[in-house]
Image 1 (cartoon, rainbow, N blue to C red):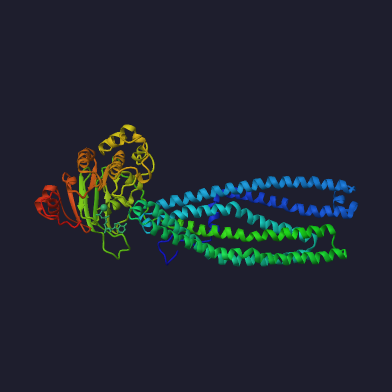
Image 2: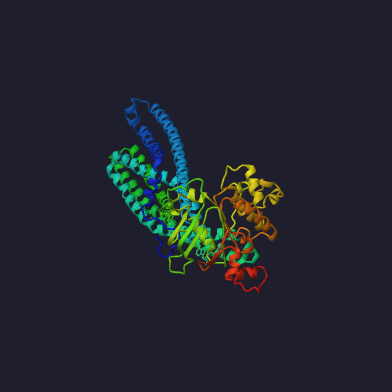
Amino acid sequence: MVAADSTAVPTSAASPLRQLWVHAGHHRRRVVLATVFSILNKICDIAPELLIGAAVDVIVKRNQSFVGRVFGVADPFQQLTILAVVTVAIWVAESITDYIADRTWRNLAQAIEHDVRMEAYRHVQELELAYFEDRSSGGLMAVLNDDVNQLERFLDLGANEVILTISNVVFVGLAFAVISPQIALLAFVPIPVIVLGSLRYQRSLEKRYDAVRAAAGRIADTLTNNLGGITTIKAFHAEEREVARVAVDSQAYSDANGEAIRYSAAFIPLIRMAILAGFTMTLLVGGRATLRGDLDVGLFSSLVYMTQRLLWPLTRLGETLDLYQRAMASCRRIFGLLDVQPSIKPGRQELLRPVQGAVRFENVRFDYGDGSGAHVLRGLDLDIPAGETHAIVGATGAGKSTIVKLLLRLYEPKNGSITVDGIPIEELTFASLRGSIGFVSQDVFLFQGTVRENLTYGRPDATDEEVVEAATLAEAHTFITSLPDGYDTVVGERGQKLSGGQRQRLTLARAIVRDPAMLVLDEATSAVDNETEAAIQRSLARVAEGRTTIVIAHRLSTVRHAHRIHVLEAGEVIEAGTHEELVERGGLYAALWRVQTGDAVITATD
Ligand SMILES: Nc1ncnc2c1ncn2[C@@H]1O[C@H](COP(=O)(O)OP(=O)(O)O)[C@@H](O)[C@H]1O
Ligand SMILES: [Mg+2]
């Protein structure tokens, strides 16, 4: 884990390749198949060099040639014909194995990429809300998108390349060893230099690529943030400033890459020198042996070609290791993310059906941080009997929304207990707990899609009648039918094609469609006009019947008919009762009420 930057996406310490192998588990058969065809392909690829040697051998030795002896054919031209037939066969086989190997590797890359992406996304979704608040969505996007794609690039080309390079060294080495062990040694001298050099080299590249990935994450971050806030940017005429900000990130990415490129580009020129040594050695030592008559001309020509064969592919080792390092940097980030354990885990119990919806908070303490700051909730008690409508009122920042987030188990209280129908919520499955709550959030969020899709989000099997009924109750039906395509109108990303009040009414209808045992409305009518609110109030009275309803509202007129109103101040319930009782009491509620009904000079701190 990165200590300096606790909000960054953590990287995994374990060997990324091993982890990848574990995650690619059920693809192992395909990995083996692809490997086999890669090796067969390499054998076909090397064969022509031997055939050249054999052809030279035929020309030089005529009826004494290797081919002549093996096939028992004396006529040199017939021998060449045999060689031609073998050549054709080998080239065809090379094409076929090439096709199969390439296809298998690339499909494998797709399959593994898909698996890893899905696993990572599924995992990220399970992490608790606090995790996302401490991190940027752009950084997570970069891991789920760029890093996963990086994996594909390596598996597509790199893995095949590694196998080809290794089998190349093995088979050419075998051929060399059979033909002339002495020259084989000389030709092989550069290999350890190249391989060890490459490995050391790549290790110094590793850090640089990690830096590149981190820089890519920061760009993605800034971009998502800015595209999300494009209205604000325009309204504040901050385009130039934002361009400058993106430019800084983009430049940092470019610089990080430049640093990596500076190293990686020097690689091939350096390796060429090592190859040169091997090639000249073979040329000189092999040539001298041939002149002396210790080595056949045919074998010598094979060797000269094969030195090239042996060493040149090694230059690609650089590129391959490069791909490999980039992929492993990505792997470390992906697996680092997978290593993060969700700290809020679902329980196993289910609420008894039919769910009553009795909610109880007992001495609940909570703060968002590590406990060093002030508590947001300080020993909160709430008792909401099943079927009643309770209101929570209080100034902004009093902790009202926090109560709801705790009830949904988006956060865990530090102390105290929260129960639904007498069962502690941490013992309940998410499906049972959250499935019984219809939640209208203060932060309205609609998905890209049609009005109908958004309304049935919590219950995809709802009938059209149910959808229309819920929309009517939420005072949304009339405006929906006046939209260009009615219920099939596309609302745009985050519902941006609708007005604030319209969005709010849709989220209200969305909660009602679920027909939940508990309905929780967090400032659900703050963005609608007074008239619409009054209408929604009347509908809500009907909706609230037979279910527990928690209404958080700023406007006290919204909640005056609640069974009980809890007045929250700085994380504590300071008074509770019916509207009449509280007004009578003459406390904070009564003061707020006077302000809102215009009976007092406005002094509220909001
Ligand atoms: N995700 C969060 N991380 C840190 N602090 C938060 C977070 N959400 C809310 N707070 C803080 O907790 C307090 C209560 O917030 P909230 O429950 O949203 O208030 P209310 O809904 O009553 O306006 C506020 O001081 C707010 O700054
Ligand atoms: Mg709030």
